[in-house]
Image (cartoon, rainbow, N blue to C red):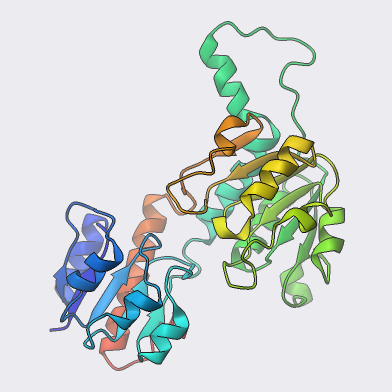
Length: 317
């Protein structure tokens, strides 16, 4: 029976399924392991079921036991795993696409709404139990019938577009390549960021985290936006240059910013915590019971297929 090291505590049903298929080393206390603990814990195992919190960089991979042949990452993203280093060591890497799409798209709409309608300031005011209605009390920005720019029109980006249409929003997008008309579903393609940002009254960040997209939202690209743009980020924290974003918020270039992801999670850029026109969530994009179950099930399926000699359905390297 193959041995699998599981880096985080899963739902009970998922752990039971893993135990039916493999000899499993579980993380019963749900401790966030360091790189050294991942190396030690997975020693003499055949595979790792990892999570997005796990630092599996090139140095970690170089020190993994030679018995490790697959890393099944329980997330749609896999920026926490050095794909090139894994390939060089002949370790297969998989992710869990599709299953997070709806839950993450829901959160992205929540981020845009929460930021644009001053939800954080509203909560503070409500807690005082001494707020007074007035004609100009906490005036936000309405989403309906506005232009939404989507950076990254993959599965999640398209799901965001579908939801935004219910608000009567006009959809614009930038992607590595133009989509086929049936996938565009009426959305307008922009060849570059400058063109997209100039048209965006609301901006939804949905692109994957790659070396090419690291800090793609920076001082220069933020300058392309109209004044008072609302931005939401449910993708990855390192896509945004936090210092540049703080400056854009303070200057009024960005009306409000909603984010569910951060550089160096769970740490948050200290300047964000000083701002009122910001809406923060603790990485809840996939946080529904159904989605988390599906993620672990899909990671388990990738492991099962691999050890049966099949190519895993979600192999990324």
